[in-house]
Length: 461
Image (cartoon, rainbow, N blue to C red; front, side, top):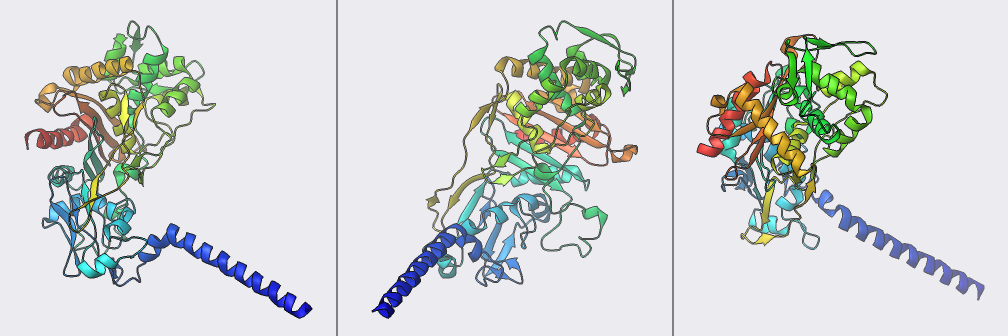
């Protein structure tokens, strides 16, 4: 009798363990089935480690950027387009982890919990992904960079649709360089610089300091300052200015002339805590999610306990601050959009191989980054930058509001970063932009013309 009881208990234990195992496998399958299906040993999807089975990726004008034809992955017909859209579309081996081909791989194959990749095996293609980017604009941006390392981004600041996202260096997926892993010219080639670069913001950060000043210094527009080419904080050190801007400089003039001395003085008056709070409110230090799934470098900003000269340098965009260009693009987009930052999207929709729209979660959030009155004052100042300093004639018909920047990386001027960011104050063309060119010089002279070329392509075709 005792033997039967023991056997019964043992069987109950085995049954319980079996049920636990079934539950564990079921939960694991639900949570990770798509990852298992996308392993490179799945011959329905990969050949020699390269993706071959997936749906078509289209740009906003229904131009196919990647598709599967007769069991092979085929990319855009035009070589320049392939290189310009590489970091958005992705590479055959999914080395570019932030690309849509990598991020949405299981959905592109048509994977589902019940049938796996059956539809791909049966029909030879998966689901189609429709993007917001314009491949023609991306090609124009890539060609404007002219082989230089950097990035160009354009977004509709009303809808959040990313029209252009280009990163350089790039390469042709049909002809990868044999020295891509050793040649310095291809350093960071698998990184989308728009999303993941850790850049010193240079004088574009003065937009952040300006927002903080408007929010915290009531008479900021009535005040004037002096600049003799440098500013020496009371506690020691020196902030160098690129020019001697003279006496009686207004706040608006200080931003237009990008006066380091004035902005360093304003930073000391604001103090560490207020500047830190504004930087955080504007998203520096927080990851940006593109289409809710593709993440960016969060950025870093810290002036806790900083000396006066360090605070002064940080407020003009030098120091230890690091941001991704997408962060600056979001800030200027919010300024343009009455202080509202909308969710950025690079995906427009997902459809089955038969053309039936499929559910895909795309965020449609709107966050108030700035008070509308602050945004309006910033718009006025950025417009003044163009009309009085950069030259409206350089950006004909764009009604541009902008800020340039030249970030010093080290003592070698040839290593400087050229920045140009802003937006079109135009209801018919609500576009914000950011351009960064590495190993360059003046933001207005180098990055500015690239921005103009790309925006003119968008507006005039």
